[in-house]
Amino acid sequence: MAIEHNPESRRRYDELCDNLRDAVVNPLISQYVKEESGLSNLREVSTKGKIHIIRTYTKLGRGKE
Image (cartoon, rainbow, N blue to C red; front, top):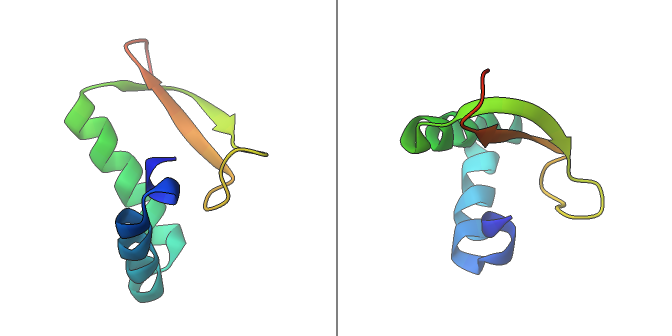
């Protein structure tokens, strides 16, 4: 959500998607956030009505993968 609502982040995201495709960029962002936070995958969550740049995301937490 932060990317979509921050003009500079959105510009950079769009630039990366133009060069690499969103099918590459989104998983890379997800993996980076997971590694930096030290959290585990909990479940997949729909973004319907909330975010327009992705359809689903993986909820992270301290539970099991």
